[in-house]
Length: 189
Image 1 (cartoon, rainbow, N blue to C red):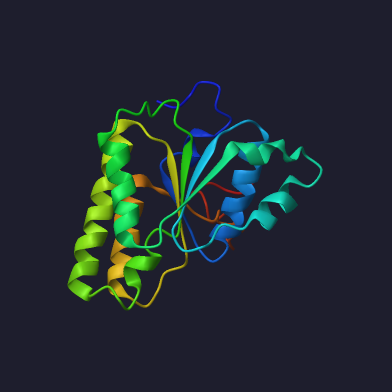
Image 2 (cartoon, rainbow, N blue to C red):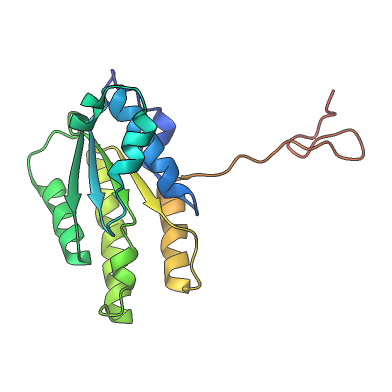
């Protein structure tokens, strides 16, 4: 369903990037993709976009790549949900729409201004709308921080992981005492 000429690997489309270094990795991806011609639409939900990281990753590559990046800020959960509703209801061709990168979309849902029951409802609505844009054919990458001590946040992350998959750190290959390795049932030789 993605553009045929897209340099974006299919495994990066419609997935979750999670962890301490997820923002740094996302900025690296965005720089690489933008420099190879991929258009990117960023929903910066927690003032996480760092233009300096992008230019650092671009290094000596043409800064023309910056023209491939659009930034939209969402300062409240309602602004993000309204923007997602627009993507769902408006007559937009998802196959020519840029890759959408959501930077910390759940951050504002956990602000102290948002009451617990409202938070739960809004997070449910967020996942529902993400599923809708996924079904409509939009490509996206969700970037969230590490797990928090909040059970609702962890439940939200698990739901995202189940519905869209996640990029996880690869396990290192280690040889076991019996000559096998930790990734297979076969001997390491």
